[in-house]
Length: 448
Image (cartoon, rainbow, N blue to C red; front, side, top):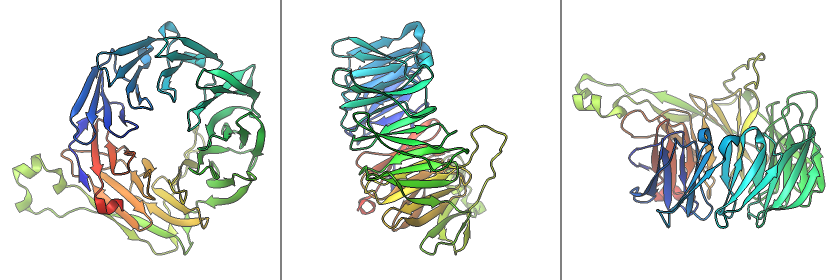
């Protein structure tokens, strides 16, 4: 692995363009666009207020910057740097802003979720959609960009509207069989819409594109329900994580459960490999303590770590959640399925230091990574079965079917990796600390 120099960012606002050519970062009022290969500044824009949200258009020609406190959105063009667009929602306020799939419309959600405003960059026309529901994930587009599903709340009931993105005409409008809809998500092939209820009731409902009810699934009653949902890239499986510390896998033919994955405190499965991170502080002699090393080189004192395979049965560190607090730290909060549909990675909130990897072909536990600190973020390579994760320290961790590796980011100063994401080619990782970013390049041998 090789690492780039460090660049500033704020609010974790760092995005690679969909075509992979540019890297955009926000530093307070400034939007900095760099060439991804050379990291030279290609464009520099100044916004009217500190940026709270930033997003590329699908064709990589425009960048949206939202300033929620002022109810403003500014759009910048890479082809014509002198052109710009300002959208002011005025006194009605702004809580979220995003692109439509065609990259020529901006969808703004106003304060108190009074409406969604659709602004056209081409015709300057404005459309309004009433009654959007304030929930975890109330809006989603199909992968081909043709349709949008929107959760609505009218007269104390949940509804779903499906719009055609070409002209924003309403295609279907139907009532959802949920008590309090928490989120919705299209399958990658755009044929099925998954809708799930709030955590107070375990219920997930599958609708077709034309609003027909395909199936409804409930694993249990009278207990906290669904916490996370993830489609497989092939649309053949739907993984549902819940507060009972289990993941249930539904199939796309009958929408019935084909298996469930438990997260036990003691691992006895002989086919699973438990990788435990072991830290080792280097011994520093007095002859190593030169003034230059003390002031410039932090690698002298950085803690090295490696993975060791633990003998079974193996214990997984558990934190007991506080039952008196809202949103207890228990259950499956994050799910991710690899690009080849072969592996599923899960995180159980009351086992925050462990990451679980499941084999979707054999429907069994494959590996458990036990870290020295809670897992902050994990993400699959977009092309290969390779998983990257971070735990808020100076290291990057990688898992693949071949094994695990821990790599220390050799960056001057203290670079604590808070989150990370892959470049669309899978050739590099973008690492984010609280106020900086750094690029991690995979070597050719690692990519094979």
